[in-house]
Amino acid sequence: MDSKSVKSFLIKNKIDWLELQFTDFFGSLRQVLIPADELNESSMKNGFAKLDGSSVTGFADIENSDMVLMPIPETLTTLPWSQGVARVLNKIYCKAGSERFERDPRNVAELAQKYLSDKGYSSFFAPESEFFLFDSVDLDVDNPASGIGYKIKSSEAPASGSSSSIPYKGGYYPVTPLDKTYNTRLKIVKTLKNNFDFKIEATHHEVATAGQAEINYRYSEMLDAADKFQTLKFVARNIAKEDNLLALFMPKPFVGDNGSGMHTNFSIWNKSKDKNLMYDPKDKYSELSQLGRYAVGGLMEHARALSAIVSPSTNSYKRLVPGYEAPVYIAWSKSNRSAAIRIPTYHRGQEATKRIEYRPPDPLANPYLAFSALLLAALDGIENKKDPGDPIDENIYHLSKQKRSELGVNELPGDLNIALDELESDNKFLQKVFPVSVIDTYLELKRAEAKKIGSYPNPIEFYTYASI
Image (cartoon, rainbow, N blue to C red; front, side, top):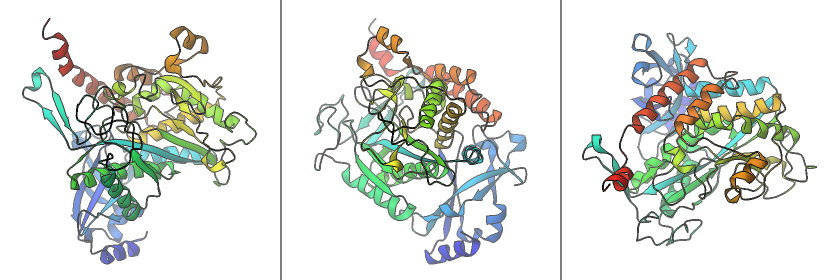
C-alpha cells in the first residue's frame, strides 16, 4: 500500500485518529494515538519519532532511548469499536531511524523468515488460539506482602464452583443455550473476518467448563501469522469488553480443569510455495516426509530449551501437567495428544494440510519469538538430520516411568527456572537468527520475573499451612 492508497483509505473511512501499535519484548501490544493526517508520504518513509525505548522493559537504556516507529501499511485497518480510528502495526528503528532495532520481537521474526528464504524454503504457520471468557477476575489484594489471590466470576462456573450449567469437563462443543459465550465468540470472528482480513476456519467452546474459547484461522507465512495472533488477542479483548466480559489468555487460571494452549501448526515448503516438503504420500504411517521427520527430530532435540520461549510464564507450568491434554512428554505421534508433537492425520492424500503440530506453546508466548524459535529448531533438525526415533501411539500419561525410560521419552521442564537453565545451555541453534542481546536480555528479565513471582506467598500456602 503506497502513500496515495493510504491517503485514500483514510479519507474513504473518515479516519481522524491512528493507533501506532507495536509489540514489546514480552509480547504485549502497545500503542500511541496520533492524528491521522500525520500518516503521509514522509512518515511512511521516515517513520514517527514517538518512542522512548527506555520506558519499555527490555528495549533500551535511558542514555540511548530515542526510537522510531515505522508503519507497516498492509496492516492498516479500521477499528469498529472506535469510530474514526484506525490502527497500523509498526517496526521499530533506532540510531535516528537508520537501523532496525534488534530487540524488536518482530525484527527477530523478519530475520527468521529471511533466513528460511535464503535456504530456499518457505513456511506456513497457524496457531490454535485458546482463551477464557469470564465475567470478571477480581484481585484480592488486601495486603500484597502477605499473598495475592483472585476470584473468577463466570456465568459458566469453573470446575471448582458449584453452579455450572455445563457439567465438569463437558465444555467441548456444547450448543446454545448451554454455550453462554457463543454470541461473543461469533462477534469476535466476524470482526476478525470483516475488519482484519482473517480467513476463519472454526470457533468453538473448548474443553474447560468455564467459558473457554478457541478460534482457528487459516495458515499464512510465519510473520503474518504472528501479526494475526497479536491482532486476535487485541480484538478478542475489545469485543469481550463490549459484552462486559474479560478475555483472559492466562494458560491456567484455576486448578482442576483444562488450561489454554496455543498449539502451533506449521509446515515447510519450497520457496516457490508449490510443494509441501513435509508431505510424502508414500509414507504409510502419517504421510510425513523424511525432511518432516528431521524437523520433528530438531524440535525434540531442543524441546526443553524451547520451553522457556513458548511456555514463558510461571503459570505456564501449571498447565503442563498430565491429564488435561497438556503435553508433558517429549515424543511424537500421528494422532496422540499426550505427545508434545502431533502429526494431524484427519485425511490422507491432502498435501496442503500436512504439518507438524507443536503442542507445548501457550497464549502468553510472544508469537514473533516463539514461531521463530520453533522454525529454527526444525531447521536445525533438517540440517543435521536429527532422527526423532519411533513414534509413540500409546497414551504416554498411562505409561510407567520405567516404560517411558525404555522408550527414551524425556519430560519437558517442570517450571520456568528449569526452562531458563535449559535455554541458557542450549541456544546456539537460535543464534543463527536471534541477536545474542535478545537471548541474554530475555534470560535476564525472565529470571527476574520468576524470582519476583516466586517470592510472593501463594493463597494455597495459607490453605495448606495456616493450621499447622
